[in-house]
Image (tube, rainbow, N blue to C red; front, top):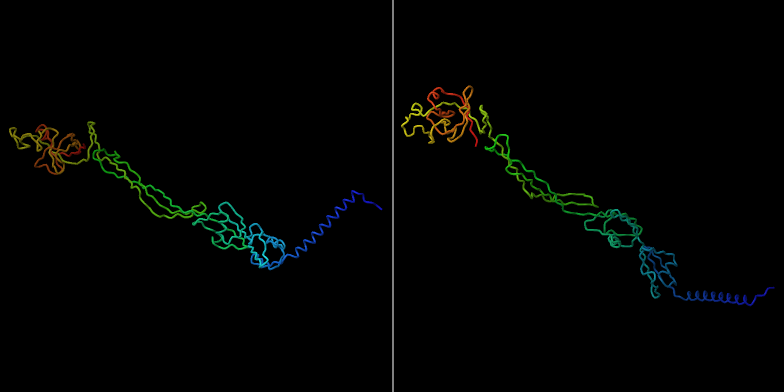
Length: 353
């Protein structure tokens, strides 16, 4: 037989008292719980109705009691902390969050939501959706429902107006210049390109050009053509090494004359003796021409054909009754030379200034 010491005796008494108090509180609490009134509860869990009676005092309590789990994104009304009513049936509404995958550019978002439609989901998650943007996989106002597994893609659509410019080539205009030698060209006016503008409406999707529509075409600057002159004057070098420029050459026949009565019908005492039709004194280097062929005042160079020597430089300053068409009359110094000349073939070069 063993005896409990005074210290152990006191310890035993304390433990016994705690056990008695615990049992008493538990029994009393259970009795008090049994005294709580039953409350009617209707739970709408995603369309599934659960009707029950409970002595729990809060929404959270009755859900836990019946093993109904609420996820973070699920919608519940009233809130879990709301106390249950005793005087009327309690309605608890649960909307389960739907799973939606949304791709925006390079980003991919996995979203749980209880929102009613896709537009509200975008607003909830601060996803911008412009008027021109396009949604692939659904429409922006399509409903969201539990159990759905939707993959969406937002295509950023940007419309813009752009202007492109295209040069308009100028042409080169050429005109003759009777003061320039053949083969020589001179720029009178530089050319300038014009500008044609095209206004396009362009559409980009996620930064990639998808369409390009011409709206308007306008010539904003008219081209200025380049103006050039080319020489028409040829150059001739005589047998004596002299060079001159001429505009054209005429094959003609030539006779010779002096101021004598034989050639002109005027004696030395006549007031017009030795005076040409233009009023200048007749001398070597003056020729008579048909003004319809070679205008009076024209400077020429007369080249002999074959063995005929060149007459040289001359001025068309006289006319003659028999000088018609392609016939000229050359003034010489002596009657002998005039008589011996007869009729010869020559080339008449019309000199340029």
